[in-house]
Image (cartoon, rainbow, N blue to C red):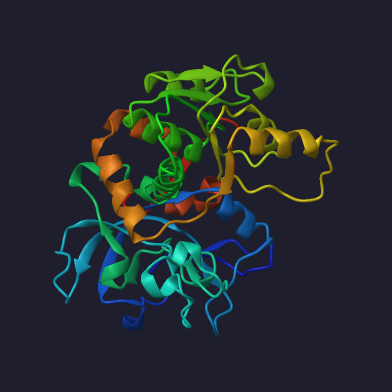
Length: 348
């Protein structure tokens, strides 16, 4: 069968194997036929050789962590043949740590977790794949064209879950949300904010292309100005760029009792002249909270599936700016200026 693979650490190793072996039964009882795989920045970084880890005893890593497929068989009876499904990316570490032991593998304490298509588990960019039933998430059949968005939606579902948990430390009546970055994570974070009935503002550098229209189609407000030029102080900020200047600016911009959730991963090495004392004073005197959020556990995946089922299908489809057949896999993994979400189509 076909599989898109890399040799981790080798930036010129991307290929599509035509004779990849069928998934071993020890990968899981649920056998799934791949429909599509979403592509994100993590894939590009693995292809560039920055990180990635093949399964033990194997040289190559199958890419793909944003999955969508149809169940072929599930002897456990948890799912039925034909069910639409996505595979959870992260699996708990084998020790397990206290968090992994209770199903909170997104909060793993010792770093020994594994991840499909990223770290020590084969990914979903292959014609067929397997997972254990507890790592298979059923989807509404109406999501057959957009279900690969479940993985990035799970990331922001976790972010919102933790925002609300922190907010409930006291009487909390948030009104205004600022999302920085209008990529897939930012747009999906805005979607979940709109579903919560909040006034949503999205900030991005783009002044043309699909991003402004996608934000407005949600009923949100689009801004293409620096954070410090905004004329409001948000109750909640979901930061999705990882740009150091933006990260610092939103920490300073949040209102009293504000909550800033950082989801973007910054690259190191850049130094900024910054008044840390003033930021500390503001955070303390205004009871503000800044926290980081990454990955998701099963509860968040289920929350994400519910959020996508409630969303407007045409808006979700508009996030997918390119659908590329597997035969043109190299094109799919080559970024284009107006890309939002690119999908590798196994069903084409």
